[in-house]
Length: 229
Image (cartoon, rainbow, N blue to C red; front, side):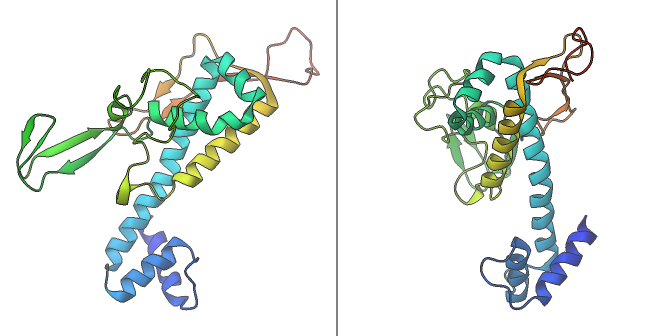
């Protein structure tokens, strides 16, 4: 991946006519040319963005599909009012952040929630815990589509650390949900074949999610056959 991204970074460096709306690699190449960052840093940033874009979006889509399969009432509500799908995505990413936490290194003496911290201490910031803060969210463990501030969660970060791919992730998840709901009349989990999460301390992603899809059209085979899976 580093070799692949380095090749494309060099291609972006050669494109001196690229304007401000050019792809992100062009911005990184300008940073290299100006001396703001070196090439290794530019490739590293590219690798993080490339990996996060695939990993986090796949995790988010899997979580939305599991939720719809477990909540037929919710799936029916979204079919009736597709405008609620955006709010649904925010609630799923709040309750099931694709990345469970981030590390932070303490740089100076300080105190956090009554705990004294010293330089060199390492923190593990748990996004799912922050997203269930009862001082911020009513019924924090419940999926609700009527929240006043649906984007108040921490799953995409905050401030200068806000995920640059958040708009794309939201769009991709919404499109998948819209298509899945339009193409089916019901989704459900398959008894005896439970979902399985990937074995990772950091990533919250379904590795195995068997779902039964019941379509609108009548099957061409025998009516007693099992629905499409």
